[in-house]
Image 1: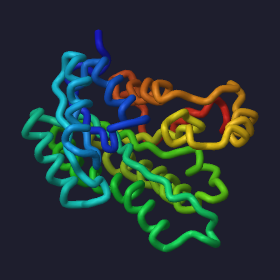
Image 2: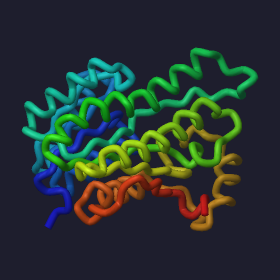
Image 3: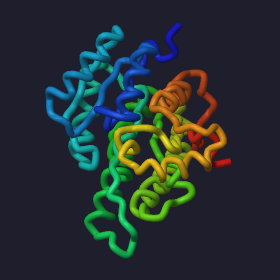
Image 4: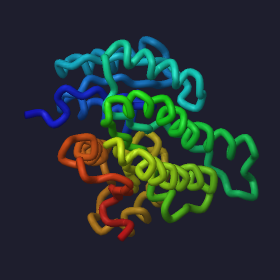
Length: 248
């Protein structure tokens, strides 16, 4: 029995990294997948094909997750295409790292808009339909940096900490409608982004991880499957750390 059979999931920022891994794992577990990204149509079509190969429906939308109106439109199209929406994974995110002394207003604002406002945009768009059907699940991608902070990432840490507070507020507001909201806080996960980090810095990160290895995107995706499934029907308002024990 596949854990997400009959469910429809919408995942933002899904063309690569953690978002792509979540989309693929959800599809393997039987969920129909809608996803967004800023890539071109051909890039989205490639992921559509991979997902459809798992025997599910899949549709990609070129959309800027930081823009409010396009989020409303994407959710409307998802509802029309899939006749429902059960799971929203707010994954879209960027970094513009710099020491605060050198950080520009543009760098700060852009990271907050993409990482945090996008979570508001897609949650706002989806809560109406979910409230009507009296069920739904939000999974918001925060970070260990949103819990502990990190030098040179004041903008990123602020956006990811904001996701935690937003998630817990949504969980309290919508719990009576059987709508759950949880955040995940990945630690050092090997993605295209982290592969650019100097090897010496990676070694320093590994020293702080009890499991002595970086995480994989599949490690993150599998936790998301649990949170999206009926096995987690009594789990809401939580921040699940996926960090090999870094934060304990």
